[in-house]
Image 1 (tube, rainbow, N blue to C red):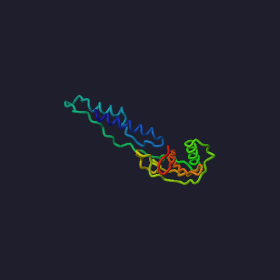
Image 2 (cartoon, rainbow, N blue to C red):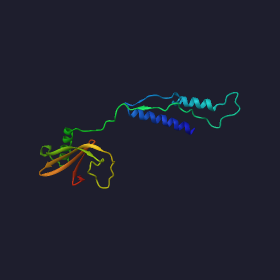
Image 3 (spheres, rainbow, N blue to C red):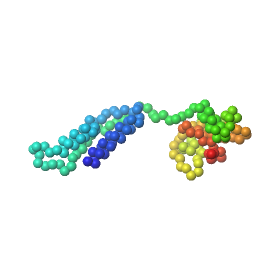
Image 4 (cartoon, rainbow, N blue to C red):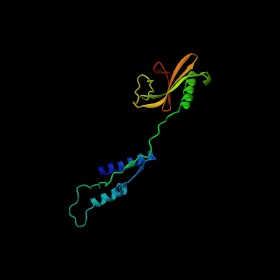
Length: 167
């Protein structure tokens, strides 16, 4: 019985994964992998035939002849911003943080960056970050002679001063 539950759970898991990625398609399946096929096969094997005198100790589950195969038709898309959108987001974020008008912010520089983790190279003390390369931009903005580094990646913005995010 546990084996049947595990197989049904496996089929449901595959179905849920398929629903998450509409571009992936299930290439081939065995008809016995359906719930009806499993139940039918189990009933046939567990019920004794008229000529048989010996009943199997426990029902057996049919082994699928083929394992379902997934074909990935496209790479997942990452949230990657362009330079213009990154600059707008950086100015908007700094203006909100300092409670000033965006027109008072001067752009010193903007360059592409590849951050080594999700902290965008500006970690907050006491937090742990996923170690994955994050594409983005480093924008240096100036307000009243003070420069601010704004790190952008994966749709997030961090205003970084001396290697620490500002609150």
